[in-house]
Length: 223
Image 1 (cartoon, rainbow, N blue to C red):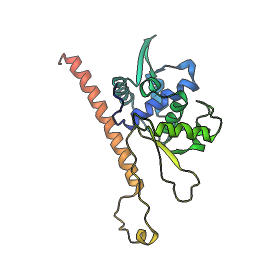
Image 2 (image 1 turned 90 degrees about the vertical axis):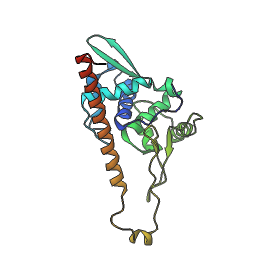
Image 3 (image 1 turned 120 degrees about the horizontal axis):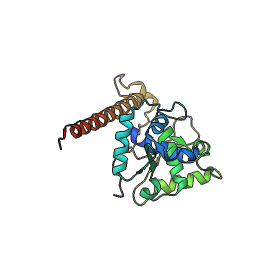
Image 4 (image 1 turned 45 degrees about the vertical axis):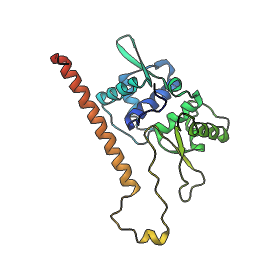
């Protein structure tokens, strides 16, 4: 397993986040079946962004994560089950896995928000403890897994985001006078986010088509 991971898609990080979350919140159902995992990915609460992934798309994401050793597939009963392998592959403690899971499931958050949202996965003593683990994740010798974002206007705390899907696009602050002269045709942060969502959707569709083609070739006996 290389120390530097390739850039993961939104759905691939969503799958990882769901596995890490459900390991702590529903241990009796863990490892998860494909159906349970699809429901967790498409969950309407505690998810940002909310997505609608098909079973084939989630299976394709699992195939990618399995090749990277980030998940482990086990067989038992009538269905295969899946568990994450985050700590062993990335060499991080369970506290850091909890933080990464929340960032993958809910998007950028402040240390205070992460402390509250992680409570069911790991109870941090205080915000300083959260920040310590975030700094540790950001300064890993093998490569940072999180980054602290520039403070937004009117905010009291900086937000953090994970880097498993690549580095963020940081929008430079434009002085008020310059902003008034900015052409209306310039790309906005919202438009960039929409483009990223469309790219993630297209990647999922390509993965689904690839999975269907592999199945078709297998059915036809074509290598």
